[in-house]
Image (tube, rainbow, N blue to C red):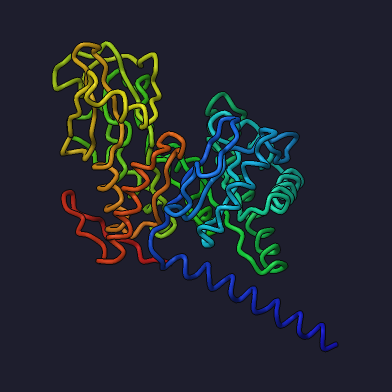
Length: 397
């Protein structure tokens, strides 16, 4: 009897501590979330700097017959390496991300019935336990939409919520049994269509964080005109009105608390070709370049000062490159723009910064900028919002 009482008391203490930790997260400094996408390669020791990361989302696990499974034979080894980084940063979490642009084809079927959801949730718990992970990042692109040619249904809107609620319920049971937190996050499309096809107020109650993919607003094929792919603000001359600021405001209006919004930023650029030199190529007709997706490491080392000139759009708080000889325009983020976005996170009391993805900037130039800006702002207090002014910030939960 005494043994049972002691075990019960210890369990209560662990559960209480876990829930206190989650409560503290809502009031702590903004976190940094980095996606790591090895593309089938084996990660090497020292390749990922854990000191500047609060959470790693490993991309991607596969879905097979409604269950989560490793996408590569190297995933177990890579996950073990990332989990081992907790020796350097004990507070860091490692989550598995499932889905993505090309891997979301089964989500509509998974979310359809209580039975299909249970199969998926059971497999998620098994995967987390087998790999000693801290949670799951659900990257459904997108509920109620075809995405990359995926199956979808009108009822995805409600079923997406049900799937996340089932995951949260099972995670809560797992937390009670183990005394350690399990985190549930999603990657969310920064569009009006995404908000229309989801129940974000309900979703926000089920998840710990919404990783807002505030990039790829223009990939070259959508308008036939160059513009910024991830501007902080909307330039009045831009062919589209999408921006980080407009997306954040829209998600807050939809019921997502500021403290649960993690602002996504790109560690890569998008490019257009056959672009005229007027306005250094900005807001001009163009076609997607042969290499549309360019990692920041390549931009920084081989393009800036090597036939490309950097320009700055003050209205959008966004840099861009243009080559007169090649007639190529590149939209990207650099240390200056990411410092401003990080300051925006502080000023609006958002939950943190997320980026896609770590291996596009292996030298840590961009990650270092984000970490320094957030830490400096945490020590001195949130900066003023500047121009445009801040919207009233939601209080932390």
